[in-house]
Image (cartoon, rainbow, N blue to C red; front, side, top):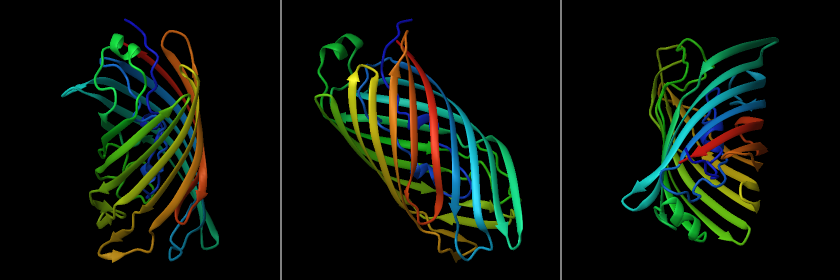
Length: 304
């Protein structure tokens, strides 16, 4: 087994779905379309923590909603040639421990949950760039501008109770097509992505007899990273997302989201093809939904 030093996008394995909001749109994934040689395998394990307030619809009789989530995620990825283009397929499975509390009238209520959240699979293809290269060819070829596209699918594999309002799973399919571009210049790399989340309906929404629909969510990301040396880099991250208005039993809610987040990611090399990443992010503007501070530690090993 030959080890190899390549970065897997951190957002692949650190995303969690919580409460009833499209938190997938909050992803921050620096170097999501970075080039890698074909035949490279990745194994990733991450731990994460998110905590903060949840801004809810003012028409709801709930105030001062706070939530805390701790997660453990495992992921696997492999690069391959797709019609001569460089492609990456990944799968991630998170387990979440969550606690939420809020004030209903004069009473404070709290709930806890633990279990699997919705899994996620992703296929990304670099349409322009260095193409599908062997490890030897990859080492000899200098970095180039990359234009890529991806499709992320989140099946309803997470824990879900129709009789509960707060769940770890969404009980629906979520799909996000995305395009992205990466522009290297010396040690600096500038990246930008644009994607749209689409959701199927939840036909067993609280209390199990309701029908819930959700509008698409537009998601934009931007990243600026600096490479100190191979596998040692830092990235400054930002995302903005809008949409997600819900309709429950033909009643349209006033819960559209227009939020933004800022964060940073640091990657450190370890020996034998391993690396360690630390990522943090916080809400910059939050109109509705999660206003979390999030931290994640990710260990990765890669081999040919």
